[in-house]
Length: 341
Ligand code: PHE
Image (cartoon, rainbow, N blue to C red; front, side, top):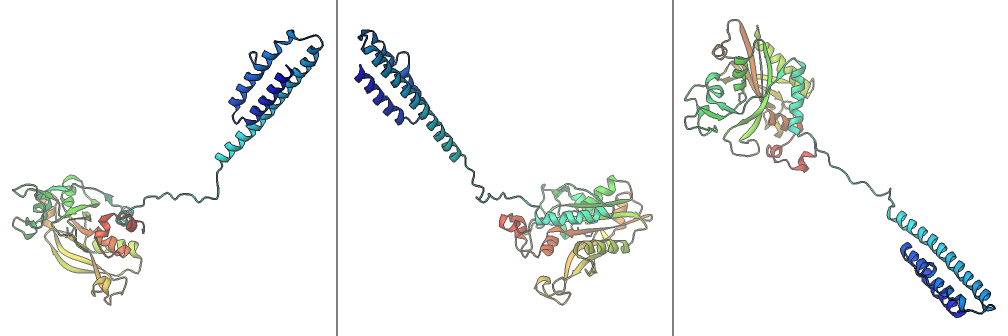
């Protein structure tokens, strides 16, 4: 029996030291020290021993039991410490690793310019309006004094929806003038940005879809001086107080008199350079006093009321503002381009 006990002690201690998991250790405890365990099985045979042998073997059995209990306890602590270390290692955060950069979207350069222009007009008491893109020819042309047969109504320039040329994609934001005059009470001060469409091939300065900003003011006693004063103030707020403008006579069917406004080239200050194509000036908008015929057509007494209107190309403003050389960049939405603004 003595040999049996010593064999159990040797084998069990070996096994205990070899455990790597808490569960393994527990099953060893059951195997050797449990009620049906090997040590208990040996002790059950104590009755067969002689009275002299009994205390000797009993003492040895107790020694083995407490030795095994001790080693199991010690191994349990070691395993716990190991497990903790493993956990800490696995959960380590390296605070020196550089963070991953989150890309944040930005406002499109054209909308940056549009929002600036809107803000300036709102500051002057104008209301912002957005109008329809699918229009009746009546509003896009006829009521704007562009009669049937006028070259601007050609199928080669305009996207028509119907054979009878009555419904189209607006070619300008000017039909907004008619809608506003027909539906609002006077005085009117509105700014209406939006998309317009013309049958143009895409190149560095053309696109079949582009944006215009239409502005209009109608009241008693409004003159060309109000138009010039307003537009001068807008470009000075937009480009700085030193900005020089000039107004050239022009023709539009729906304004009389009509003009175009140029801004002196910011690069060469009027001398002529590649940016202004040698002109010294950059054309930015068309404008004029609303034609009495147009006012009357909308039921406004042109003897009492007068007004001005202008239409400006938004893309051209953005190209100039950010010194972008090609219109296509505005529409391609290449992130590498957009990120620069
Ligand atoms: N609609 C004109 C164009 O597209 C611009 C304009 C608007 C001119 C208002 C005069 C008054 O060219």
